[in-house]
Amino acid sequence: KQTGLTALDYGFVNTASTRSEITYIDGDEGILRYRGYPIEQLAKGSTFLEVAYLLIYGELPTEEEYLAFENRITRHTLLHEDIKHLFDALPFSAHPMSVLSSAVAALATYYEDSLDVHDPEAVEINTIRLLAKLPVIAAYAHKKSVGQAFLYPDNSLSFVDNFLKLNFGNFAEPYEVDPVLSRALDRLLILHADHEQNASTSTVRLVGSTDANLYASISAGISALYGPLHGGANEAVLNMLAQIRDSGEGVQRFVQKVKNKEDGVKLMGFGHRVYKSYDPRAKLVKESADEVLAALGVDDPLLEIAVELEQAALNDEYFQARRLYPNVDFYTGIIYKAMGFPTRMFTPLFAIGRLPGWIAQWREQNADPKSKIGRPQQLYTGATEREYPNGREFS
Ligand code: CMC
Image (cartoon, rainbow, N blue to C red; front, side, top):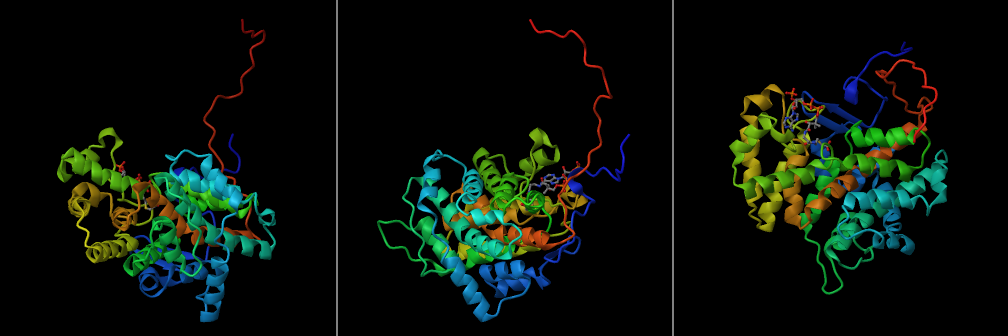
């Protein structure tokens, strides 16, 4: 007999786990707002750090608040020298998402005040540390994968420029940040900054609901984001496009395979639990893809395949009937590739973008006197009570 059970809801399709003031989505209308501000306006007028401030503290910063926030983050970009040995312990082929989640979990061991999860000052300083250090960890994961030396952060640069230099600079020659890349990456980070109760954010909240520290909670969120049905889709899209190109099978044949559900093939970068119309982020990403490729003079055949694939799907009855549209991950990989990032770095870029959202959601829950430890119920379908057999002996 099940007691107190109200509903079985695989994938939490119909269950709200929390109230939240942070992000609003209308999936039918294709609307996304952070703290009430439309994503289109933020993407046009804001910077990533300003959006991070908005998500975490609830309001857009004044100029003074913005500069103080930026300055604090800049002063926390250094990683403890010892934590760099963690990178030595991992193979150069390590997926950067595994490196990220391991290193973020390990950060807690350096900052014992992170255990004081109900001390606002401790929460604040660890918020700043995490915002400052995650991009550095991601850049080092990249450097490790290509066998190059880690650079120290350059605190004379902006948040995004510093990140680009840590990834693409080296000791042999000077590195000039391309402003087109910088602005495009900043804009992409804004588009990823929060998306209410998606799988990784719900993971961050669930882990945080046990009063686990911020690093442990975010590390778990990174692990949830890694999967190809979630943030890992941006990497999977590029692999899918490359596979269509290399196999020479053509877009129509690939679409047919998806429709037949052959070998479980899906159209990666399409479909969304909440958006049943065009993902507003995908529109903005496509604009960025056109801009960046034009500015860099890149002519990528994968972009042509992507455009052809998108049109084929949008005009197809299978996708129309299921209301499947491109999501944020469909075109981002093409931009990251043009910027010079290897495919495996795409999901870490998503993680850097999503970090302010995770932190804002963790803090909202942490400050809510009504929040409780997360503990879903189940419908038990196993054996009824049975007697343990007497005299059982293994020879
Ligand atoms: N390709 C082919 N068919 C699909 C796809 C797809 N990408 N997405 C959904 N469907 C079909 C699915 O097979 C089902 O068909 P049927 O009713 O015949 O069984 C129907 O559409 C409904 O799909 P669902 O699996 O019930 O939808 P969901 O809300 O559980 O899953 C999703 C959402 C995003 C996991 C899914 O659309 C998907 O796997 N997409 C591909 C991976 C992807 O692009 N993920 C990124 C999501 S957006 C950003 C992020 O979160 O990181």
